[in-house]
Image 1 (cartoon, protein in one colour):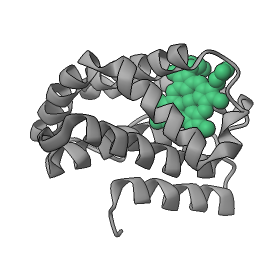
Image 2 (cartoon, protein in one colour):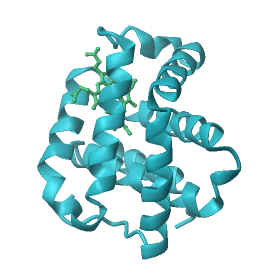
Image 3 (spheres, helix red, strand yellow):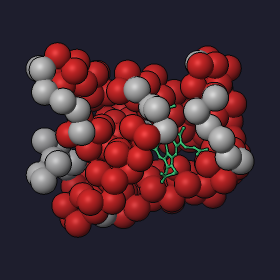
Length: 161
Ligand code: HEM
């Protein structure tokens, strides 16, 4: 992830930062709602989590806040994001868990924002999530695993190529 494959336009960066400030106001509510829904839809993911889910929500918010605050200098947090991806391997998170996790997270965020969640916001937030996924991909072995992960990541972006 030395240079991201993905660039956010100035409009997209502004959209993400604006929406994030508003989402931070209700972070506790949507954080808890997100994990509740995750476990209802994907019960096999629940046993991976050992700690308090309110704290978990807070950690998720904190790391997304860090990524969003560094959109212009994403290379500066390369090591942190890579280490986070590496820790997820140790938590036994499988590469194929990322797409459902991210899609659900985006839908919970969209619901929290209502009409203020626009197509631009959606696309821009998908790019932020892709940056996280790039770090995950970097940890995969080459071959079919890698190809599958790239395909997975592209679905986050909803792009055809
Ligand atoms: C956008 C993608 C994701 C982000 C930003 C993210 C962020 C985080 C953060 C900040 C932590 C706190 C611990 C640490 O820093 O190591 C964490 C822990 C964890 N995450 Fe994620 N995560 C993501 C995707 C996933 C996915 C797809 C799963 C699969 C179910 C998952 C499962 C876990 C588990 C099991 C823990 C450890 C919880 C515990 O010890 O109780 N994460 N995550």
